[in-house]
Image (tube, rainbow, N blue to C red; front, side):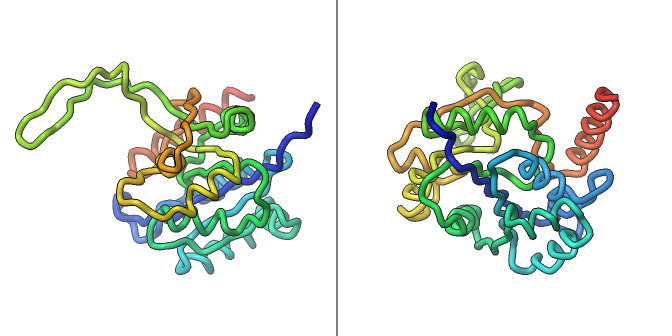
Length: 237
């Protein structure tokens, strides 16, 4: 039996507080007992054989360092080399590129995840790594629940929702392939890491996601996340 590949996780946290209507960037807003980003990073640190790279705007570095100092799990991870932080760029593409560049190895697997998706399950992260090792990529997705219409100027038309899925993170890839894909340069139509991978000529492998793996971008999302965490904690008692 072959040895499993080394795992890395790039956590991208470059958001602002605009849609949250707050001065504090959304990844630092408190979710119950700690900042949203702390929940997310701790989730990935709990996986064995995994190094985590947090990518943040330069202006937020000092604040993040203070959070690490006050969090035992994060501070221990930094001391042991399991967690490092790098500065992001002006776009998500540039931030992910910086995160990938912080990985010295060319061999392994890398999960790229939104810093404001703290509710992703360990099971889904593990599944993504396993599938990416087999197929080169593994991107979480969920079926569209609502009806949808395509808008074209003043007209709109029905879309068959059975042929549409919503994409989540983590998006997990063979490290060598995704590094080469990002080396090709940024394109205006890139919306996520899977589109970068696809542009490089690779097939995107979709796997089943989880509706609870929400991206926290509005005050309503934060309220939902609190309910889901409390429910999970009470269910485990």
